[in-house]
Length: 174
Image 1 (cartoon, helix red, strand yellow):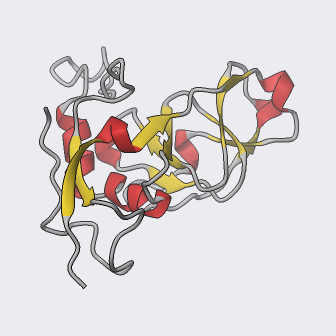
Image 2 (image 1 turned 45 degrees about the vertical axis):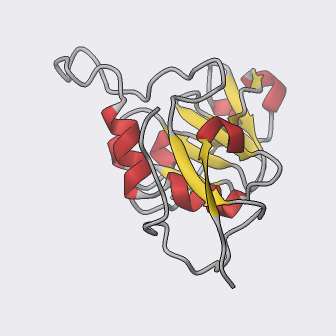
């Protein structure tokens, strides 16, 4: 079955969840920091507890994409296996209606997405001891101007085994 693909701006398909919570309000909740996400392996290596952290954190839900925005070239990306709280150095990303959350995860973990995030990082021209590369601040629409291709009129990929490096994807910045 043939499927047409349409170009979409990333912000049309996903949004950042910025629900903050103070550690005292999240007692008993699991906590995910960058140290709990394996570099380049798309795996969670463990988690902590909210009462052990000091500053405000982001809330996330099971299935959300967690993308480490600090040193994005480390490719610290996972799908949350449970509800909890995470470091504010992690983007909590949720698909908008009409976009499949699993597709979003595979695309955000692709080399193309990580490379685009790394190229757009702020602080990469500074000495490492003075500034750490971070993904850029988001636009008013909630994202840098990244665009991508997705099946038009469908909420998921035509073949769930399709590689995230499929030729029909586009990561050009607008």
